[in-house]
Amino acid sequence: MTRATAGSEAVRVALPRGDLRTPLAERLDSVGFHVDGYGSGARTYQFDVDDRPGVRVRVFSDRDIPIQVALGQYDLGIASRAWVDELLVKYRLDSLVPLRPLDVGESRLVLAGTAGIDVRALARDSVLRVTTEYPNLAERLLNRLGVPDYRLYDVWGNAAAWLPEDADLALVPPSGAVADALEEVFEAHRGSAWLIGNRDALGSRDLAAALEPLLRLPPGAAGGGPAAPRPLGLAPGRRSMPSRDLEVLRLAVPDGHAQRHTVEALAAAGLVFAGYDARTATRRPTSSIPGLEVKVMRPQDMPRAVALGRFDLALTGRDWLAAHLATFPASPIAELGDLGRSRYDLGAVVPEELPAETIEEAVAYWRRDDPGRAIRVASEYVPLADRYARDRHLGRYRVIPISGASEGFVPDDADILIEGSETGTTLRANRLRMLDVIMVSTNCIIGAREEPSGPRGALRRDLVDRLVAAAPAGRSD
Image (cartoon, rainbow, N blue to C red; front, side):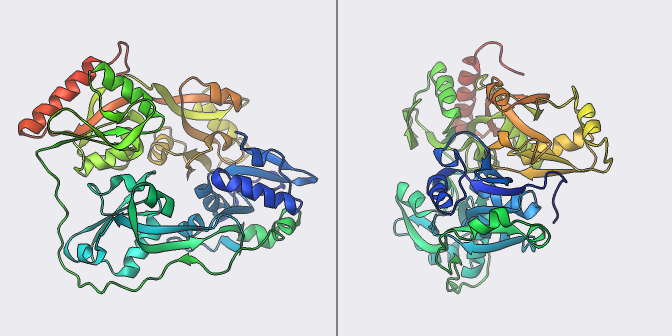
């Protein structure tokens, strides 16, 4: 791969936000690579480096850094080895060079299940269901174990929340296993943070202003990486998927930002679940309605879970339903009702100073000197970003998947950001504006297009009717 765009000759370094940020900032200071404000956790994404005028730092979500360096968007980066290997075990890129381990961010990933689980017996008799944010590392581990038949659920977060009803195992950090009272079964990965570089940049550019101090960072232990366990020794053959109780209606409700709005919608419909309110969300809230089971999940993962038949209803965002249907147009799920809350616009975000009032004018401006230039579109909503690029006839384009810190991507790392905005405050604070609205998103009820038969179907109908009737006036269509 080569650098996506020509531009400044500054040496560009990608650093992680999150838990790595504070200890890494201390080590950077110790080698004379002082990034003023980086260690404070401020919501700033771009920094200069003291006394190194030719060096620029950009802060990303840890998981995005290996991709950015591999694409040539950044010359150097520091990221957890787990995310480096998550990319490399599937894509053996010659553009990404792991340079050295660092003595910060030592971590493990483990395959975990409920206490007393017998993985060998489970894999022998049924399809093994595994949830994780690291699907490539999970697939490698399952293949090394020789699991004959498995199903991987690539989730946005809270992988352990799927157990035990909707998955058998989760590949998670040990802390995630402990939080959900899971038992470690196999180690999947071990490693610290790594200094990585782009091969083209290392071979063709003078990176000394950044590389010299970064190579003086305290080294971490050698070794680590993906585990190589002994195979289970199971014979191939036909295996069945675990079935669910079809007498029980299963409802998924969200955690995180959507939780408060969902609690309001439920309360307006006279529905209260013990353990699920504006401040708390136990994994399995208690319902007083006979035949109704409730579980808390990430809203991003709900469309797939409903499509797989694990849930009858879910309260998620229209944006995540749209992203799912853009990927799987024949999916058997649909919106059953609009809850009219958590409203925001999802659209194409560009720099405030861009001299364009339409996306057509923007594309013409970007290509004024290079008609064949690829338009870079960054988003967490990868399927919607891809569809937007096609629908707006952008011509040659590249979709860049991201997982956070999105406001800092344009204009340096992308031309367009497909992003949501409720009030526009965050966009204005980052000197951005929404040029083109793709959709208005609210929270909604989703379920299978075909209603279940019998009491389960009647209960589903009753819940949908109550929630829709309680939705505020003026909701989006």
